[in-house]
Image 1: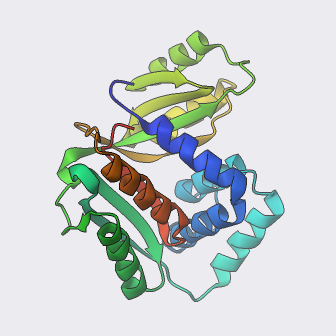
Image 2: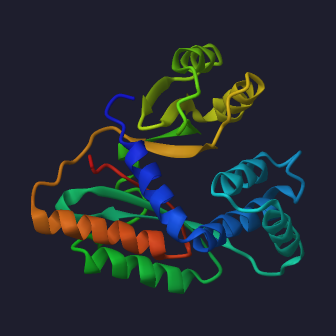
Length: 240
């Protein structure tokens, strides 16, 4: 995938998941709450909820936990609001942070603090989003090396995928956002085990960080976002 470093983010999330699955599921749960309020609790008719269930399973969340979460959020009066923040990290890295929160003031304060503490600055809406293109991203993990890469690539491209790559036991398939669900379903029907299928943002250009202090601060800022339960996704143009 030309210039795309999404795998680094996936690997980072996977390492975090191994250490803190409960926190990961808390984040997914908030996304489920938003999806249920928007489209109902039936995954058969709610594609967003269906993909979040697949995402939870990919993080080894037991089915019982998923079912309890759906019931909880179906009956809950708590309303989670989706808010996106934009800003610049160290060395001018463009950063987009997506959140789901029941307290706009708390989350805004936390996000601003993380930017400030790590040498970045929180900007206004639209200040960096023009640097990114909304796409779909399908990942398929193949840690045992059992998947035929050529067959997968052929199936993905025939289904309409825009790009394909494989690295360190993970295949990445980029799609037009409108084609994401259809291509994921086509790959599942072809027998390929889709790990995740979700929207992503791909930067038009990348920033390399040379300064060691800025590098450490960028890592620290991403760690803060990982640890924040209100944050559901982070996109940036750091070539790491």
